[in-house]
Length: 291
Image 1 (tube, rainbow, N blue to C red):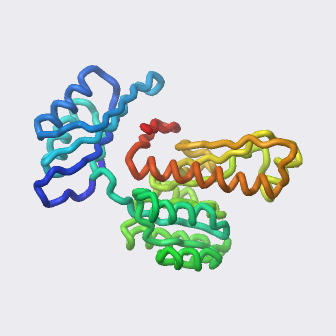
Image 2 (image 1 turned 45 degrees about the vertical axis):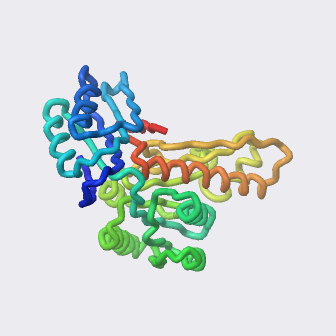
Image 3 (image 1 turned 60 degrees about the vertical axis):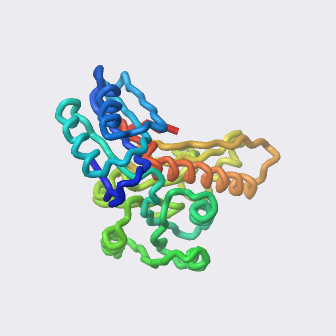
């Protein structure tokens, strides 16, 4: 169960409710009835029963004059009956986001631009980098920048500083926008379900340096990107979104790099939007995405 503070006004609020529980008859009826009892008008509803895990997932957007406390109290009554895990938030509320980057600017620039121009529902409260290359870009968008160098000897201190920033800034989401550092298992556990990473989809075929050159040398026909939640298993967290671009023998290595960056931007932006709009629910090692 998670929640956010409710508006004090009694005017109608547009809420988004997500829930999961063991699948059984009566869940939709109970939830819809609860919302109706609180004057709720459902504007969007999606659901999925996973036959593999036996779990039921649901996302509902509803307008209601009921307060958060009233709705939360009613949902709490359903917890024991259905073994319910739920989250309730104001629809469209910008999620407080911290972006980690190294030297590549394309993902950070894209997220900041979409936040400003497309109403991407995030509020980038800070950019943290182990280099200073991205500082002018952060300044351009008016985003506070923190330089936190990382070496093998300072890695623990750097992660402690990162966690301190997460607490100080009340960060809800961390985005690894081509951050070229591996997070420790402890940090991954501390921020489980709150960190999204983006990387090219050549793994595990083309590891290490210059993956696009390796791919070009092998004559790949598809390049792609994967956005996923971060876990202690490197690049193996639950996948949120993937995208691909078809290429052929006429493309140079530089072409592949440019196309790869564009694919990374697209996949990451969709993953961040869906997370911020509470459209992604975890189902073990998989995700349920209500687009």
